Length: 396
Image (cartoon, rainbow, N blue to C red):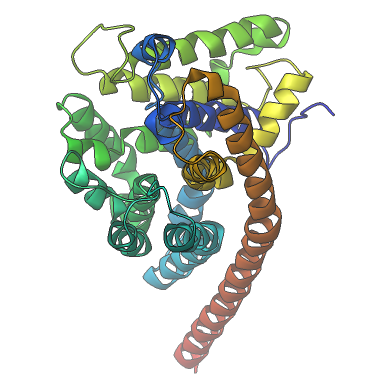
């Protein structure tokens, strides 16, 4: 089935989610899944950097959130209306993000205790502390503190979730108080981050890609946005795919750790704008980035399950290693075992992400939307009744 433009679903953004999560998986496979060293792996990872993946996720997230949230909050005329709209947003997000995140934190703790004879999951203490950090949404600060100092635990990918939740807790306040200066506030914050050398803590709190996605959403209601739409890609689908591949290659080569492209010392200052460029092209919902094909449909599946894949891929990697060590105790694995490791890990990721998507994500996302909508309607009715009472009292 071909991906058709849809008002609520932008297929190209799911395609970019797939690119992002695949880059992250390949990046994390080194050492987390593949425990041996070889000349071929050393050469591959010398030129492959997948650390741009979170920034691409951030840019997508910023665009999707802002195109609904900013108009909703900007239309509020009172503090009570703003609070109601913000609660609506926060409740929906809680149901969308936290159940799956907390479920996989619990799974990691359980595996650490019951399925860890090889020690691959790390100590219970490290994972317990990481779980608390994940629940309290401060995993990014723990991640920065642990870098080169102490083991984080098996849930280290949660630093991105904490960063997003911190940002989206504050963003409604920025919209409300910034109002007509919102664009300038975001632009100033982006420029400040782009010109700063990135410390470990700076990388753990980076929001430039998020804010670039928001700026694209704000721009999307302007006539100038439509004026630069790359409509020529409609009749040249391979050109759009070449553009996607070219920008992705640049991102892979620019990612720190890669020996690929080195243009300026501030590599991160090039990564987020390139991620935003991909999101900009995808935002037109024209299926410009890749012609329909079985490969695209597979990537769209990956993109739609990308959140679950992101959460479960490290536990899947560690479980694969534990399985192999139980099946072949005392064995020192090598490149000859590469494909069996990949096959087991891929199977676990596919099964777990599909179950997570169907059992947790979709039902709870819908439930959260219903609860938020009911609360919003109730609050609006109460506000309308209060305003009517005040007007009645004034006329009386």
